[in-house]
Length: 185
Image (cartoon, rainbow, N blue to C red; front, side, top):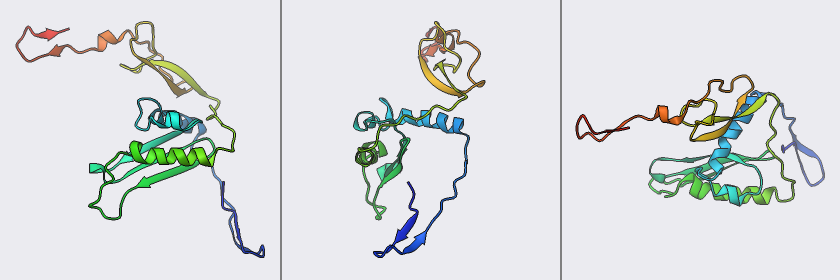
């Protein structure tokens, strides 16, 4: 959505703008970043409540300054981008909450209201992007030996090729500091 023209009551054009659109990032890279930013709005993320507040795919990033002075959420859907900032001009006043706690719900309410008449759209996976199950311990291709895995997206040809040989091999012995015989394997 662009502001293309401003007219007066008589329909005379007061100002007109023709956007100059240009591709600035490869769509595969943009999709991978979107996939990562969807984690913030998924259960366990910093703005997890959006997963039940907003009834469409969203991606975004929360932010909070030191000592909870300011908070924000910048997010997008396939149709709309918006940012919410919560803070005070007086630097001595604090919001007292994180961006996920105060700004993300405002953003979610805005997105739901703003897009309620629009059909839900999915983030489109561009050609040349593949999904792969990876081991969270070492980032290698998950195998039956991998205890903890996650799905990740890659530009085709960059996905992990080496298999995970099991998370157990990567665990470091725990040393309680009580002597040479206290290492727990």
